[in-house]
Amino acid sequence: MSERFFLYDDTVDTKTRFVSFMGENQRFDLAIIQSDRYYGKHIVLDIQSNRFAIIGEDDLKEPGYLEFAYKLGEEDAEELRDFLYQLI
Image (cartoon, rainbow, N blue to C red):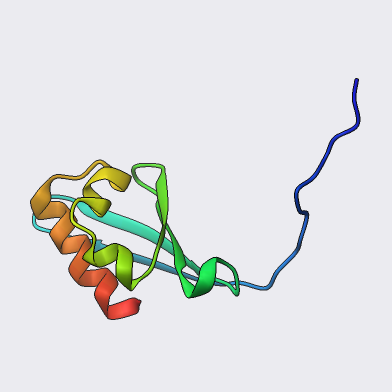
């Protein structure tokens, strides 16, 4: 067996916010992680769908980004986008 080659192996302090809200069509259970990585963007985990994305304000403005990342319809993605705009 060959020796494992790490690109990096760091431990960083993070701040995690757990939030749940009911949209018009579905419930969102999110873990929103802040750290000094990813150029100020947040890691947003959707616990119900088992999907996550690294999201900043620029990503929220990108058409279709949330729909693709979380496999959401347009209406549900807009509800998530509106909520995330308050945080990011």
